[in-house]
Image (cartoon, rainbow, N blue to C red; front, side):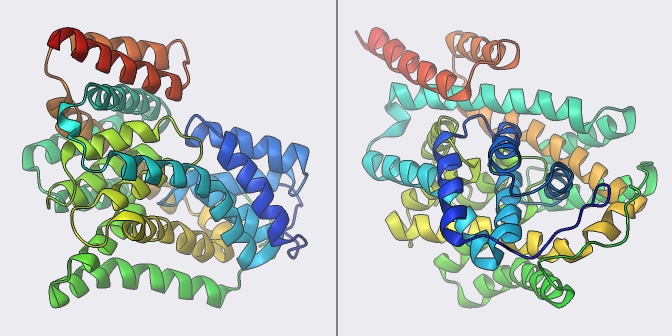
Length: 405
């Protein structure tokens, strides 16, 4: 870790971890980057549960891992503070508020024709603007040089040209391979390995389970031909392959649940737009989608399955990486591979911004104006996403009412 800091044994309780995480789950608006700031203020400055250097190391680790970045940081802090049950308490507390709100929203809108609802159209337009803002931010931070920008644009072109879901995974892998071979990313000098709350054997078991599920669930669906196995596989795969932030889950979930016809495109994008207005992790959109499934499981059961499946990879990868983090940071090849994979992920999001977001949401010049205004408000005026979502939902309903009248 930084300097001479060392991680000590867990010294807190599950109750205090849950209470702190619940407070953050109720108040942390703004997405993963903002969550990192909230976490720092709560866990480092206010509660002093861990030192500055340890926190920065944990954030760096979670940025390199696939999964829900801010949730992984919280899980790691819970693991350091109160062991395995502390990690679970941290995840439940941070996830519960937005998950409950989105599942309730799904149940209340069940049976409503969202394709004809003006407010739902406004939510879809908000999703376009928010993803465009995320693409701009990621382009600046994750593709600052010509090689990474080339990887991103090539990835977008390949995905748009093929339209095949399996290409998404291949593009990320190819980006990692190009980064490993072409990008010069020096390793970080760190002291001797610090004590870890997870033993090496535990890390290996978690990593093995991660890959067993990633590779085994599609085979299990093929053998059993059970739709619920396919549901688990779709959400698990989305959670396992996300790099670069929660917005990247959009194209992965679209491939998993919209293309098979398990959720309509209108419902999917309305839920994604509503998730922008919630505090806590963006991954909780899985609760809305799971509750809205047109196949079993659905309702509350579907929400529980979807949430568990999409967050499980984040758990497993944090546990797997803890014992080996110092070695990974020293590896220039590993850092280059992750930089290349992140660049490819930008291409994935660029492709998703055009299809399905733009192609299925924009139908008039008024839509273009609304998206442009929302994008400017988000990117240049730093407007909170929840406010942009609320305004566009209202405007969508007003414009529909005026056109009908």
